[in-house]
Image (cartoon, rainbow, N blue to C red; front, side, top):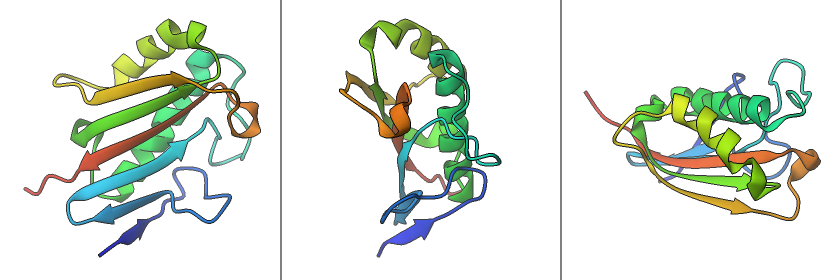
Length: 128
């Protein structure tokens, strides 16, 4: 069974996809780009600000699913330029604690709206 996850705390889907989905205890968060959900505008023009906004959007979708960043098992980071990796990584490290999720970071030719970063995650909901 698949359930859509939706929140106003992250930008709405701009195509035929869900902000996130849940199947059992697994939560899949669609790639989040640095859109401010209140204004719909791209947050900032540098990798630090854009990474922070993208991760806040990820966090909002996770919270709508009853998860936290501590529940993330795997993250994928898409970067416009791998030379931005160190700055992205510094911000990324503020959102996660050990044990860190598995992660891949790849450089891509282009991202939606020409943003600098997009981040997607897979999490597992912990039941208390």
